[in-house]
Length: 143
Image 1 (cartoon, one colour):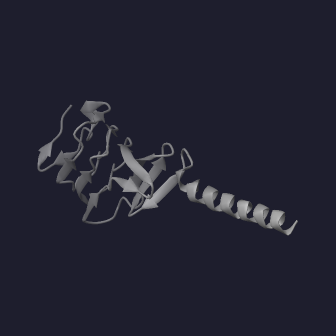
Image 2: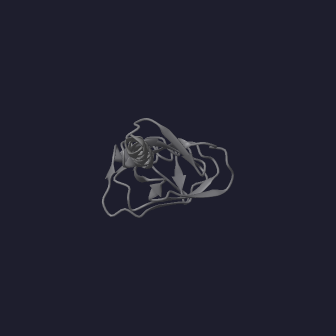
Image 3: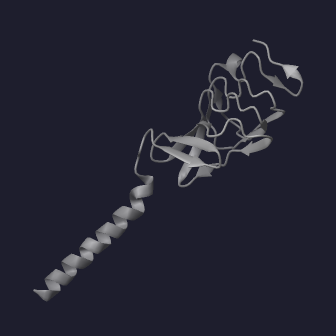
């Protein structure tokens, strides 16, 4: 009887440990994660999208999006993700990016440079990547 209780207890503890270690990879769509002034939206159990910037008025900053946030791969830059970030100077997107939404830097007038490290990605609404009135390196973008 004592052995059965001991074995049952050990199995219960083991299952709790295994379940809790898998919890980080459980799909939690639409959950948000904040990391270094960026808000990410969980897409599925393996990937996230850059959703927005927490403090769009942060002055004179360079943003490097990492390939991973926690256990998630950063795959998408959502529409308007960096719009109106008045102090954003440079933006670097990782190799893991597969999709870039429209108007990602619209109104970010201090932006000097965008670097996209991915070899293969889709830009949604190509003519609206940076917006009608956004200037990069002294050149105004026109549709």
